[in-house]
Image (cartoon, rainbow, N blue to C red; front, side, top):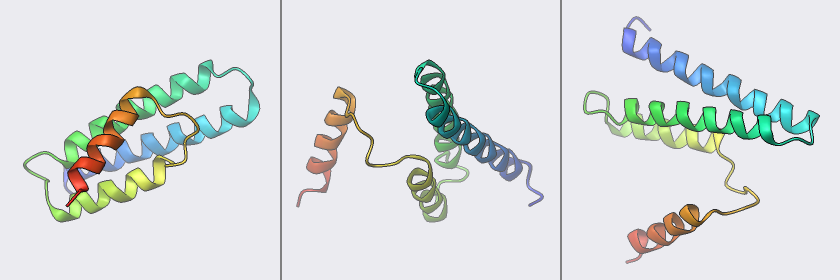
Length: 100
């Protein structure tokens, strides 16, 4: 990989991985969710940057969207315990969008 943009994206993915590992570590070590929540917020912010970059006009392609789908599957467990109001709205939007 010689492209500077690709190297930047690689570094961003590595940051998401490290943050995800810290979330798992703090989840297993502490009863206090404060640190976990802080790391989750950091991971979400990093991931949003990653999505923005991969969906930019210069990179948007079936390959970049496949990569995003794989990264979402790797870093975001679909069986999270609580669904927020925003997530419920997004699930409803998903059902409407995918309805025939």
